Image: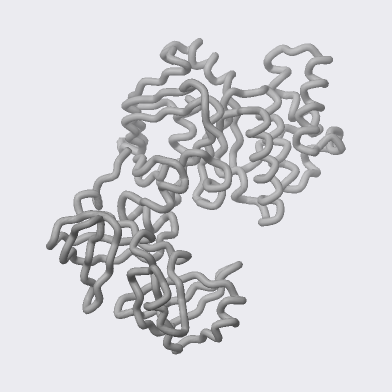
Length: 371
């Protein structure tokens, strides 16, 4: 969900707390209709950046522009905030009914009662909550309370909505249902959004651009598929689930293929590098294939290794298979595939992966990647 002009531009943003720098963002932008996710571990600065972008935390320095107009004066900040909606981890609801909570932002804006009622009921219908309009906010479940908080934010028809871990306290079924509804509503209303989350599945599901943060800095930014498949350094690779992050030495490079040594094994990777260079190479577990007979003559994969199964760990809808190929390797398989192949710890198998399925992180990029 992207398109339209740039709504918000921020440059040279820094924020200090207790004398320590907690944010350092050279540049940030958000377009109309864009859904952007900020992901990273706890303490990475996601919520702090979100609050700074909403002008709810004063920045030590930085330039803010909304649709090209600089936000400097108190009146400009006030006008900018009126264009935003905000939803936090914990629903912050007033005493009174669901209707009253959803109407609160509209009352502050001085809307007429008839217009308020029409807007509130339309928004409640959007969230499937019309039957809860007169229920006390104190008698809502966690999911209903967060729905009310979201409905209140959308009722003012914001141009951008800031979401700070809105699903973190919800049980999985409620989280999934609310995420389905939020995705639909963002699409239908064309509202831009910035979502702070540590859950990469939420980010993949909802966003058109993903920003990885660490220690108050933006480490990588791009389409979710690019960030997940082509991390710029080891930190990003580990955080986005690239469980196979290995170090090898380049022995040759040419024709778009790099050959590395890893112990006594050699791995072929699509790309280019300098002979003698030490580089990281990353393989997503879902790109590793396991066979019980040698597939060398029948597969297009350039990397085939005899391996032993060291551990089989159930992990939700799939199992995590830890392999010893002369180097450690992790693969994902469904329970049905494990049963069909009669796999078990200690069994010998063959592991394979394509040269194009491997992402190479050259030594020059390993400590960089700031965006």
